[in-house]
Image 1 (cartoon, rainbow, N blue to C red):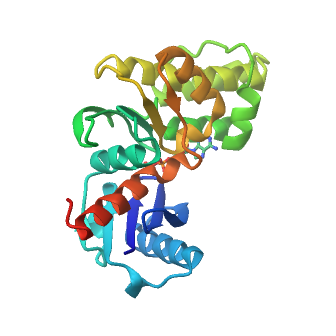
Image 2 (cartoon, helix red, strand yellow):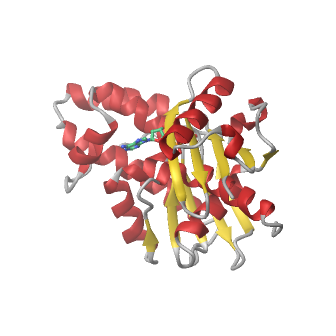
Length: 258
Ligand code: ADP
């Protein structure tokens, strides 16, 4: 029995092929055509798994762009999929924190893996991956370099709460010859602080699993882990958790459990 999960996100499209274990994965930019990105991610994951579309017992779509996928069997919300994916990887998960390209969420997970509660910030780019993308653009560094540069540095204060104003503030800091390392550290501190304030609205229960592309930044992981004070799980591929959850939902349905 084999299922596929496809998560068409605002920034990246992810696919997972699943047979009770992860057989193949793909992460590609969503770009301007979510339909094409969904198909391309699916095909890339199939190739990695050494399988074909007709081998799939069910294909499940999730993410904001799931409505544009015509080849899927069912659609499931990303909140449910993040909970299911995190629970599959770390069975003791009771809270998922997710920071993606254009939103951030805290999801309370019941013992059976269903969603007990959630809160989402999708109104403001500060506190999301988009903030990191804009700021690395100004610093002329990659997202991976941002993580390395921020490591162990004293952060400069970034006072602006809005991405547009923070952009001007950072240009000003560079003009004052504040080091890129201190600015990088200030940028990751800003994202982490936003997430910590979101967790005050949905209390975090142990264990916490961190999903979404921003969880690739080890410094943000370290700050959140220290601040939230619970067992804190970081998946090897945090960005595929939603697609994995979609494939897990499909797998349960094919087995007649969901
Ligand atoms: P979405 O589902 O909304 O497209 P994702 O969970 O796929 O979001 O995450 C996309 C975000 O991940 C991007 O905005 C980018 O900032 C962030 N990201 C990807 N790789 C890294 C990295 N190495 N360090 C920090 N952030 C990263």
